[in-house]
Amino acid sequence: NFQSTAAFDWDMHSLRGPRLEQDAFDAEVKGQTALEQQAAHEDLHGTAPAIQSHNNNQDQEELLGRVEIELSSIPDEEKIGFLLAVENCPHLVESGYERLKFLRAAKLDPKAAAQRLVGYWNIRIDLFGDDAFERLSVSHLNADEQALIEHDYLQLLSIRDRSGRALFLVDRSRLYAGTQVKRRMTLRTTFFLV
Image 1 (tube, rainbow, N blue to C red):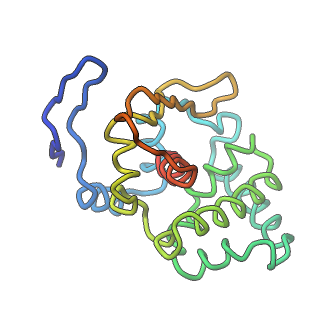
Image 2: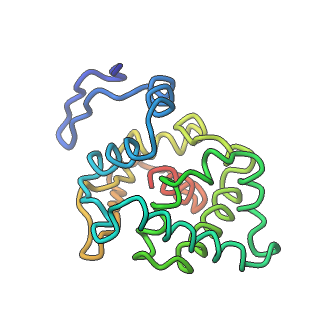
């Protein structure tokens, strides 16, 4: 299923291996259960199962139910983006796997997870407009934003900080002389990479 966009492109600073084309990725993900998606994500990012003390389905369902209660307590005017996402792309919003990511990021605090989820969709819609309701791919970035990734200006590191958060490296030396990087370009590209 892998197709290389640049078969092992060596330079002094990086190695690019084969990349999974978006259509192949979407087809593979569509056929996976939430648990298979979670396991693949953990394998890809080198993270241990995040809910170790709540690893059975009953505990996860209880926590997810509490997130749902917290979401319902947030006023509609504060969660407009979230409600639009529920309406336009429920498969990206309502799956247990997607909700578990926010619960983990909030250290199993349902109220904080609900607030993160609402904030995430407000920002995603602000940055990507109608494209926010699709599974984001590189094609949703403009040519300048794609160049930031291609030239390794922004790099998602394979290590995490002590709290388990993703780390980014911004390497301005990777830009061509005279390249102007606008704040919104960096925000959209960073959001995409996360």
